[in-house]
Image 1 (cartoon, rainbow, N blue to C red):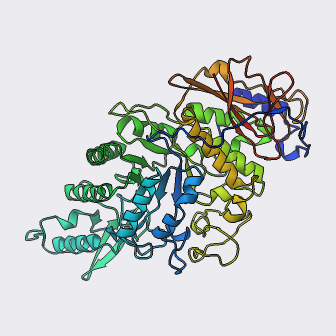
Image 2: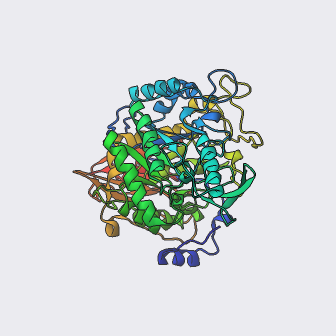
Length: 561
């Protein structure tokens, strides 16, 4: 497990509870197990969804999602067939992983940016999907790989041939077209780290390929390349796409941040000139300080927040030791995410936290309540959270240093050979430890229905995603009285106040795994309970005889002034 920063309070807790770690915590039933005071009514129908960049996004690997034509490959028509399901779960944004023609299973190496991969469908299918999404109030963004293409892309073949033509006779070289094809990619005539070898017309040359020999890097210093990607962006924005997820933005100019800032701003502003409310999220896989610099120096709305991702990320890590590590979550959402960082156009950032995706191991555990709680914590964060397909049913899969196949297995809609079943990528290990969608839809206590409830709360309470975290020093209470993890004195909870306009909410989180906690919300100045989230549907958040909120283990309550 990677090293983490531990606040002084955490160091103290660890020393106090060294003999009562999570590994030795006895399995003590909650007290009280069922009698939890008076039930609090809930509104499970109304929403208050705002049409802005703060959305609940759902990431789809199309090839493994749903097959509409019985060839066992997921396709765009299959996504259309599942839009009612996606909408019902409370997602109002979809990120389609690469859909352009490509020779690979992952399709991050495009052979034609103006063509839908035939296995996924046609451009007409994409238009139909966009229309169907917009009818449901769902925005849709495409994965766009500006840094590299496929070696099979005709642009690369033309450029390589022109580069050899230039090497053979530089004094008389003329490009066969109005564009300087040899400068579309980055070539050398001698080997270098990060470059791959290619033989063209009997001559050996070398091209930049930071990810793979099958992925040559574009030369963004060439204005023709920049114009080309403006044409790509314009084509899809005019088709109705709401924006893009930009892959690997630090590789545009590898680790040359200043040049990356300049290009990202140029690209974003061009897109905004076509679609004023375009939404673009960048993958800048760097530490928080670097990401904050990208917010401050570009006009992109969002960058992914990597602090929360993976089995060792801040969310999963914070749930250990019966709540003793909860400061990790608190620090992550308060000081980790670059909330309200202002870019060149004075537009505040919209953080994009996530639990996992196609690049990291899935976070689901065999413990259903633990798996639910991970998402509950994500759902209470500011910004636009992204959910990887299948996480809502607890799909599992490990990412290794050499393979991401196991995190791309087919979506488990039902058992057996169900309609719409896809083939997983060849070589993937198919392992499913939780029930399929059909069973979980019918189970009020399922992971799926917990995700649905968490998304509903975000769609009911705009302050969850948009609120400024206020009164941090006085309103966030870390009441850590650890004598033992099950002591009567252990009434640990965390509360996070957020202010959005005239609305003030407080999110109370019971980090305990096996004890109820109480919270006097009236004494703290709040008047109404507006959100309830429990990991065990057999329990509930109630009002005890003194009028305090009584929260079951790992429950989340939201109160409002």
